[in-house]
Image 1 (tube, rainbow, N blue to C red):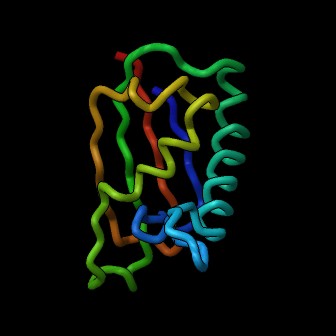
Image 2 (image 1 turned 45 degrees about the vertical axis):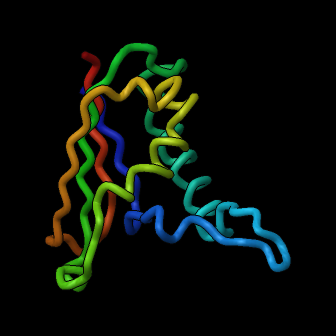
Length: 123
């Protein structure tokens, strides 16, 4: 089992997109681009200690989203948190997120330091 921890509040897909003034093109917001770059950097730093090449096999992935207690009354759709994360893991941790055949998602409101813990198992 491979464990990767991404520090900071989990980032939802709902915050990822924006439109340019005068354009209908939808693109990643600057905030989402920065968060995505941070995800890629943290994943690469941790995964390179395990392997120099992305995984090629089918995968089972478990996501644990840890939020501060202050988020307990907020409406959170935990399935939206893994989209940017999965895309940024492409070519770093796995070749493509289509390799994920089984996924589990857990949301916890018990920590003071928010993070996302990703457990990866080859199946």
